[in-house]
Image (cartoon, rainbow, N blue to C red):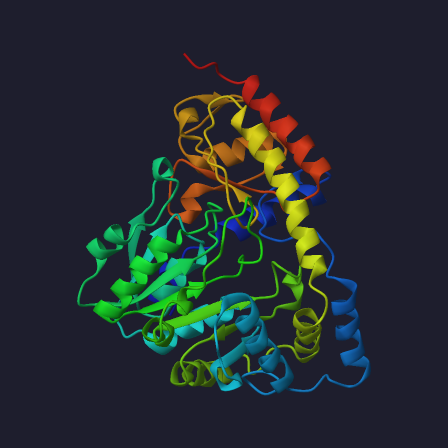
Length: 400
């Protein structure tokens, strides 16, 4: 009797845990500012919401095809061609209940027990746990702040073995906000072709890039790379549709079909009204995406400037997504508000208790010494939150 070994071995999501803690504190009347959730604070654009409402009114409330409604798959193909230089047919597209779902489905479709999956760290909290759920073995490549968290092909090459089946890339990156250099992507693509492993390219933040940096889709380098790439994207970040739960994968037809078969035994098709809203998102005006990007950029600059001025913190300038990822390790061994700081979890606990702001510890991203701060909140909240954080750190144990 009892839980399976698989369930007992799984780590809970660090981001979800902090978000829930903040909700609990708010219910207790605490004025906690949340900088922990990877969720845009903007409302879903009106024309998208209206399309979802109209779908319900028109009776589009029944089961949908497992792989998605044809008009949305066609819209995805056109979108990938226009923005990513990727040519896919509708039968190569799988719609899902959020991008997270197609990630695990791709792993289940590709991995046999013991197959190795290369993951750059720090990484999004769910990648390693999903690999383990699919009976794979996570193989981690540490990226360093001193190298701007760059993923160099020579580091990848060191981790390749005969058991390497898959590599996961997140570009732009969560949690660092980095945007991969084209030369590094090209070098990794050459390794993938030479050593015959697949790449799961998570490009969910690709519409949110700053300072003139360029996003290059991994599958666009060559026909060989295209055949070994599963591109993952969705509607949550660029269109502020987190609660609509709509994502997709694009890839080789046989892999997408296998993923669709798996999804048929999990959830069946994605939410039908959400898919009609998704058509409006892709076919409709894109100016709302650019307006959000510009506002995120304004917030990014404000937050980076404030964090750079705080005692004991170091930070790189993020180039994409909506996260700042400072090094807080100088506080280890010191006290904040009487609490001894032994790691990033203690630092975040102290920030919640002493400054009433919620951050996510780097240990959840498999890299101790850092915290993730999101700027997917109003500029007023950012200013107030950074004031609280600066005051708390300034009043804490002095540095010698």
